Image (tube, rainbow, N blue to C red):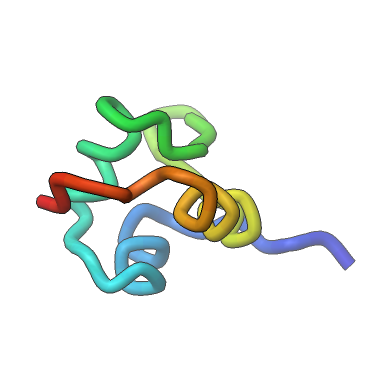
Length: 61
């Protein structure tokens, strides 16, 4: 079964940060995200791997 796509609100809640922090991480830290029209969509497995490997290591907003 394929993994569902999450919204910015959903991924922010999953990580325990604000939606604004998610957008900063996309722009400044290369957080894995996919633009679908005007919306950002996320796969939890990609985001979790990014966090574990390097992602949100410093300057949490």
